[in-house]
Each structure stands twice: as structure tokens, then as C-alpha cells.
Length: 82
Figure 1 (cartoon, rainbow, N blue to C red):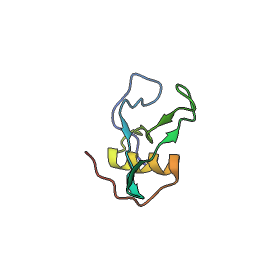
Figure 2: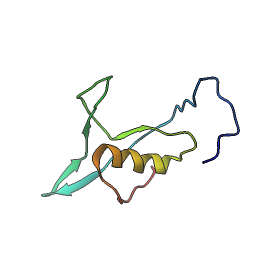
Figure 3: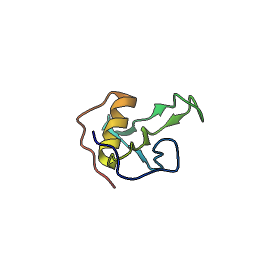
Figure 4: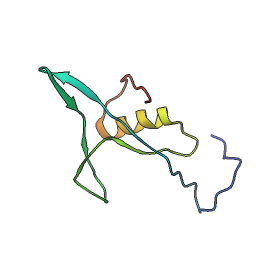
């Protein structure tokens, strides 16, 4: 992996973009939504959508898939950006 060609004002690259993933399905004729319990503060233990910060030079689709896999173990789902 090559180093970025730009400089940052922080000691390390500091992304400021996040993705949230909404996974839903219908089971027994009812709509279900996938939520996770937050592992870290703030709001530790509270319910939330899976998601998180983009890594430097990562696109939003890759971030969404990575965060979903890290937080739920789900992979190979059809993801669509809306």
C-alpha cells in the first residue's frame, strides 16, 4: 500500500465521514431491522445501526461492507447506496 501524497494537520490521517448500514427483511409477514449494541462510549450498550468511520482512501461501499462484517459477521449481502 502506498502512502498518501497529501499531508494532514493531525499526527495521523483523521477521516470525518461515516457510513450506516440498514439491513432489513420480512419474516412472518413482519418487517425486521438489524441493530447492534454499541460496544464503546458514547452510548455504550445502546442499540444502533451498524456503521462507522471510513478508513483513509476507502470508499463508502467498502466501508459499509467492512463495518457490517466487523459488527455482525454478515458478508456477501447485496448493498445499495441510497
